[in-house]
Length: 263
Ligand code: KIV
Ligand code: NA
Image 1 (cartoon, rainbow, N blue to C red):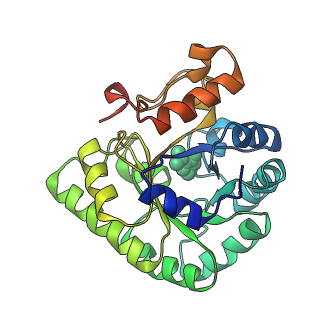
Image 2 (cartoon, protein in one colour):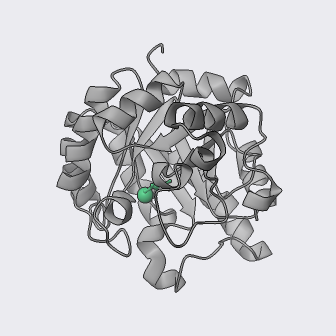
Image 3 (cartoon, rainbow, N blue to C red):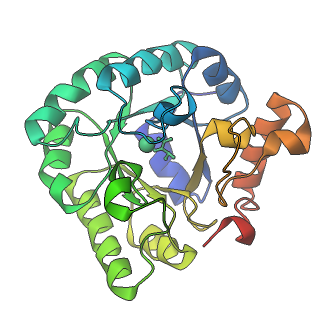
């Protein structure tokens, strides 16, 4: 794989070449995913749930993300690596400026922050200082206690209009990528068309510029609750490399997510 950069991702959007992204937390899976053509690897704070066994993402620390970012970078030198900023590591602009240091030094190409308007000065400050930013709107899991559960967001006209405005504002502040989680497909389409930066969806239909899944969901590792928007590719293929290849192929052809994975 040629080295993936923000310029490559931008060009993929322009050419309607769908971007494939997966969470990764260690070198072995990172290498395997990159070998199957996954362009973007996310060290998600989902690791608090799938690696550490917590009920939500709030206990994750910057050092936890930095540790796993080092491992992922070692396994996939040419992948585009995004490190999640964990809960309250960017509560203020000053906290954000400190928190990104171990993440970028661990080998991240970009950091991801959850939220809209309150983050605009932070996104601007980070970008000006050389730290690329990915926004994250919709169901932002660090706010689960505000939402009162993991629920689809942006369902009313007012909420949808507000999310379109926030997405544009994040782009204007300097964000170079945006993740949309658990929103109606029609809203994801509006946002993807309104923005010039690539938009990656999870539970946002097949209309975005790319897709992301938590690797444990794709491989059917997480027991119990399986989100509606995810798909067990291991059950369908019986082999890890084939499962990843099938995910990449279905994202590229826009057959995943299908309507049964969408809202
Ligand atoms: O933490 C994570 O894995 C994420 C993705 C679900 C987008 O933020
Ligand atoms: Na996350």
